[in-house]
Length: 602
Image (cartoon, rainbow, N blue to C red; front, side, top):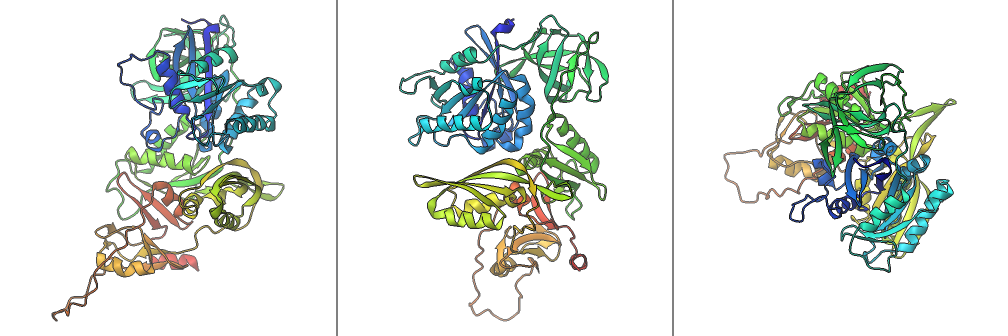
């Protein structure tokens, strides 16, 4: 068992795609965790299918390795601000952070959010400039930008005097001076051991563990993960759980796990500084303290920032309901959402008072759409409403959330982007020219960014990048219309016919092709003008007993616009729903009957 002074707990924070998970892979490989002939997966810490598909970290995860007799406990954090709740709760386990920055892009807005939380906890920061082998790398500029960022966060002098590492994690090397070549990642370990302090705590005091995250096992139930901040713990030890309401619930540790690489390994005991996973605690939640029954001392827990966006999840009531899903009732939805809130502290779930369903609130579009996609893959069938921002009222004034948006575009596309952000109530605060690229900073209402990503990629021909982070609550910006055109709505329940779609496509853009089952009230395309249009996608060609003269037009269908789940959710208006099943995603009107829709419009 390593002594307390031989333990280092470090969190790795970075923007999306700056090389964080690749760094963890290299640390594990070069620490000697695996045999030389052992086949090891790439992106070892990205354990979810969605993480591997999208190339982003969604859930914060723990890992561990040993180097020169030191146990290095690594906390891999998400880089996207929508998953900031994950970062906030796991930073409690860290005694220092490695801040990874791309050598060409520099620190991005979403890095600012995570770094702000680390500075607030007074954690020492090791800066690591990654991807220095890029032709476009500007290393000195990046270091200056990181220093300016930390100064802007009012970091104390000991944090501002940060050590700097230069690396190419993809190629597996790091160095303290980028003019001196290296062929290994060992300088990262050396700086962690030198600069990150060992965990503090009284090894002979009463046991204290603040639960930072939860996982669920169908065999063991809830598994609590946290750092031992005082005392020691062993299997079958009696403990109490200090609840948020001040009560103490007796419990017993049935299983105790430590981390080896990204795996949980059974252990018999744990001491101060160890990051462990515990089973047997039936009613445990994030932020509660596991402590000694004879001398219970709860640890303080700071709640995470509140959500800024919400959507309604309701049971599917379309004509095709129950065809494809395994879990279709509101009870199934309730159980699944409550299970999710146990692990995801930034997610809030409330029952709707005026309808059957649930209001789910989170940090952003991506946060909520990842939850929806996870449920869809697990066999759930349901409908979601348009995402809306959460308003506040202070001193009689209506406030709404604003985001700080950073856009990198070529100069030729700058005019279009500025025009479109102006129409979304954006306020331009900064423009910087750097070679062919222009960096533009805006303060935009969160409402203005809902569904903007696709429009932005179209305007920049796929060559622009945009990143945003929550800034503040500000005055309500007024009405905002993000979709100008109406939609084409199916008239009856039918199967689409190529001949009908050929005639309909002249009036707009289709979302589906021929031979697809549709129902009355389902949206099948977008109109080329304002106002909705009811169409008949099953209308066949009129047949007669007269011989054709050979002048018939060939039926040439334009390929339909295929959208992802996020695109569907951001596309719909307030009077529309997205129907989600394990096999299909459809969009529909809230009121399927045409006469009912007209009545509601009056």
